[in-house]
Length: 118
Figure 1 (cartoon, rainbow, N blue to C red):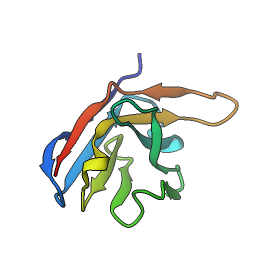
Figure 2: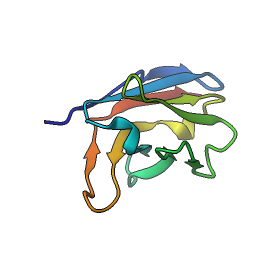
Figure 3: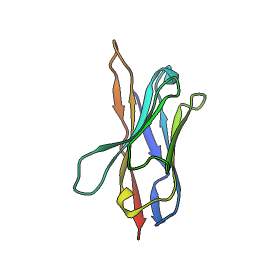
């Protein structure tokens, strides 16, 4: 059974930084696209950033220049470094692990809370 476990959330002040980690117990981790998504209070889940198996990254406009996604395939782990945090970054952050066709696998973690105080 695949496990996806996020860590690193917490309470931080405006302008502060946090680094989230996500470890996934999948075989061939390096073959998966990894992503971070978030769900602010009362809103739908939204993309934060993704990184492909080849290292191509994609960011939501709201986090460009502040967040950096990276992966360590030797540790089956993906990270997101979050700098210059704002209150609007407050959300539950979820890790996503997915593969393309033909397997079309898609796994989610349980989420980790990030709260940014004004």
